[in-house]
Length: 283
Image 1 (cartoon, rainbow, N blue to C red):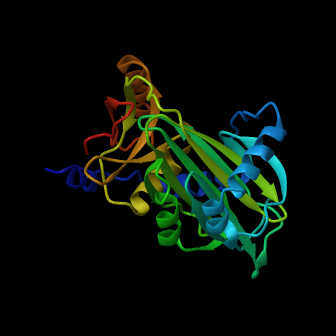
Image 2: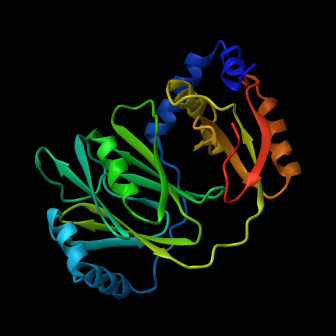
């Protein structure tokens, strides 16, 4: 029996509708709060940006994007932007720089929509979530970001919210990144740098679901396990799994699974698994 067959036989909790309704209310009312890591000097970020623009090939590739305006913040992961609705998304990639640009009603947006960027390991990846977005060409976004030689994969996560979008950017080993938020025009810039030496690989433990195709089944798992900080990861076979944690030991992962399985709404669809920090789950 395949993982998808086993998942199809799982009994969905009778109170799932109530769970989803409550979870969606919480999701609208709050966004996960994470620590922001700022660079000690914004001048360094400005100089780095000028250096990129003054490289002829890069400048030509970025000529489609309006001149970048004022720096709002520099971070590696965290939250930012302003609450909006109806924003459209486009992207431009030039070597090690990816710019995500936002329009509002046909005009360049003054600010970036409300967003969250999470950084996770096993493998090293950035999870971008934008709210108040209703128009984007995901295929073009994927193609543009994959044009960076330091990106190994890009894939979309389904959200039960038609005004939000989420995608995952997997980075190649030994890649550092910096995110810069700009206003006037609203742009989020991802700057990638190769460190040269990849960190030592280690085993990482997760509580995870079976692998399954992308779709609403995964989105429902997010609503059920929202408070457990669940994320979604592509498996080695090309399916997707809901994963919780990133524990250093199997014991810690088993303790988390025991706490989840003690709940009344637990559907019996999770297990403990592990893989190397530079790899993916098998299925």
